[in-house]
Amino acid sequence: MSTGDSFGAGLRTTHNTWKLVIAAVTILLVWEVVAHILEPRLQFPDQVLPSIERTVSAFPELSNYWKGGLGVRSTESGGPQTVEGGALAMLDNAFITGYRLLVGMAIALVVGVGAGLVIGYSAFARKLAFGPVNLLGMLPVLAMVPLFAFWFGATTRAEVLIIAFGAGITILRSTLNAVHNVPQVYVQAAQTMGAGPAMIYRTVIMPAITPELRGGVRIALTFSWSLALGAELIGVQSGLGRMMVQAARFSQVDRMILICGAFVTLAAVTVIAFDRLADRMIRWAA
Image 1 (cartoon, helix red, strand yellow):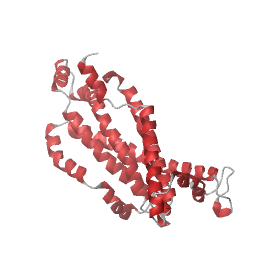
Image 2: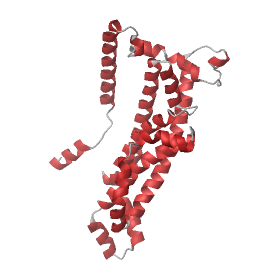
Image 3: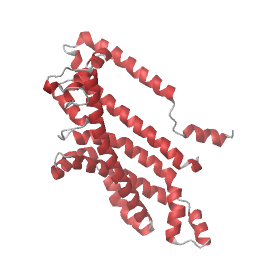
Image 4: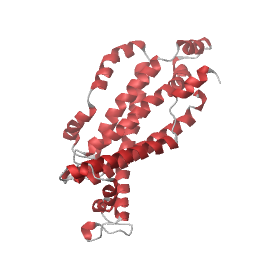
């Protein structure tokens, strides 16, 4: 293997199962050690950093978020707190949050990539849009969540739009950069063979920007989970964010940690799934 191949291979992002396991075990060990150090020093240690055992034992308490069904009664109707109820509550709210995120990401992809291709079609348009696009990229999107809630209310629409807005800006900037970085020799070669502007865009520009655009979409997808949580904190009545709000209201740190774990797991699964899909789509660029 050549030096260039080794260097390129070292830069590629890979998902090594053993590395993930080692990282998870390390985090758990540090968590348990710090929890035991704090326990004798604090009056209410469970409200700061509960132990792993205490956190896991709180899982059945998530049954309080289950509305009933599938053979498991809700606690509101007198049902007990069970592991099954906690799992169903987590899955139900995770599905709701995930659905909102996917819809927001779909809008972001269509608008971000579409606008990027339209603007990138002309060098003059790219220069004209450079300032506004970069200004939008500097906006603190999470700080704009209350503004979207004011405009659209504490609704699913508000959450979807804030995700689409934040992710769309990232994807738009990535698309513009990718179009700008396409080697001119590719375009000139197509022109030499008689290709018109539309054919050049379809057969040269779009395939050429796909590998670079992958990184921008990946970043947008990861950031979207933070946006989903932030948007659900505005008062929507379902989703993992709603569970987090209620747990925080009563200082239930163990429940908050479980919900955070669900967010991390979902984010990791979606990013890995996206990477595998992207690998198949741009296998030719490997």
